[in-house]
Image 1 (tube, helix red, strand yellow):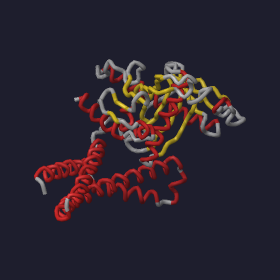
Image 2: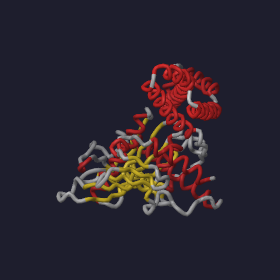
Image 3: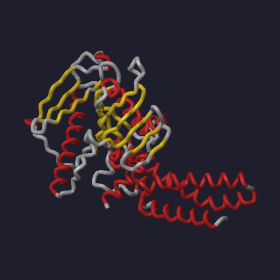
Image 4: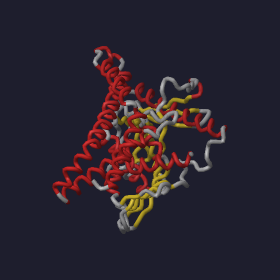
Length: 366
């Protein structure tokens, strides 16, 4: 085995050992046993919400254990793979090099997870996407972004619950709010907050001109029962109305959609995706609580002079550009990470951007 290959394998082993220590593999196994015992209890589903939390945590923990143990097995096998490859020739060595490169990518991605140590990083994520400047193209772009994040969640087998979708008249959406349900979803997706810019030939322009459009992504941690967010009933105005779908078509014939207005702050949230008014009100209250929790968190940071001058969700801060014409590129303007395959990115392949963003944020905070 070449000295540089041996040194690289040793470095990967050091990194993976560090990850195993942080994750605490034995503790993770014990946690899986506890969750499996809870999941096998027939009475678990008497509380649907708690049952979903247990099964989600179990699925995530099993996936984490499987991921780290498979990486350990592959890394342990790598030296043997090289020994056999040296006997078989150049093609086998190239295959071993490919496996080593793939292991580096996967180990580095797993290492990023160990960097998430913020107060709310372990929580589910509440994602809101709003169309910005650019007319119908911006509304279409907002819908493309929503699909991108949902596809990313699906690829990782994370649950998604859509709370509200406000459709634009011609195409696309004005806004949408949905939850990504997985441990560390907030810590992972929080790096995506900001303004996303799309440059392309507009499919809505009969002269085929290039169009630049914008959409804003907001990511909040989902509120838990341990959070102290008390909202007196007198501070909330509740409006009910009929749910509507694309083109203004009615989704149902009852006034089941709910709009909550928090009078002191002016924050407005809506939910219309559930069938009953009560379900929509419960979902809308969760979104409102999350927004108020974030507001409280930012105020506390400002008081401690920890809030930086650049608001990551402001329209002036373009954090990523997606260019489909005259060339093909997606580039993060904070990390300078870029790829030349926007189609795969828009189909949910954003792990590289997330990893680079989390590392950038860690350096920025040091």
